[in-house]
Length: 251
Ligand code: ADP
Ligand code: MG
Image 1 (tube, helix red, strand yellow):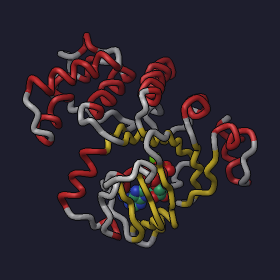
Image 2: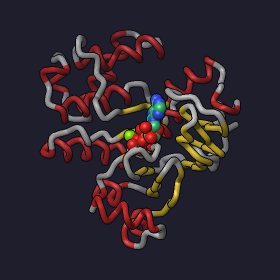
Image 3: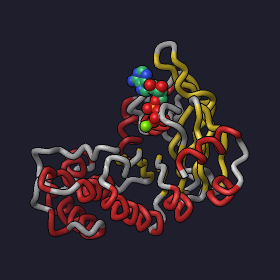
């Protein structure tokens, strides 16, 4: 039985190497149900690697990452079936949308629910249309990704992830490849999702978003978590020299 007060996601003693390069060092992070985490830090600090370990795109050598009891096997060598289950429950939105270019928006959204959740086409389509409406793009369902703007494509990517009914959403710099005028429409979609109670971990340097939405900001540097604090505290009174230096550069 799952206790409601246990964290949804629990990362303990996570260490990862790329060959000799120590990419994640003793990372510990507990994320509660409904919590919104913003991860920031300099380029190369391990933010993407951390996100990729959470949904097991990357393996890791030490520590554990459990999603509501799934993935308890240490060292990232969770059983294949468990890894599949974790990926089903964790939605991911990348910097570069990663939509299938040869499929329509609707087909992009129904593929995984039909394949992995074994939903009928009618069920998958119904839900996809609902979610496309929620990201305010219902009228684009029959277009191909290449016919949409970057902001529209990213909103499709969010809707597509939501079609799998994830319990946790991961965002890796979802607005950093967008033209400036499209950033806000994607952030607005993410704010709506947060307000609906979705548990989210967002790598972003959009500090207005962090202040508005985050329960806690995680600052990473050189593969380590150096500081975890509520946004008000982190932005106004960063404790670590390197957090101050980082904020000085981006604000
Ligand atoms: P961030 O997302 O914070 O910019 P990353 O997690 O992408 O940082 O990368 C952290 C470090 O790990 C960087 O030094 C990067 O070069 C290295 N790295 C990332 N992926 C690989 C890989 N597949 N092979 C080797 N080194 C990698
Ligand atoms: Mg990155």
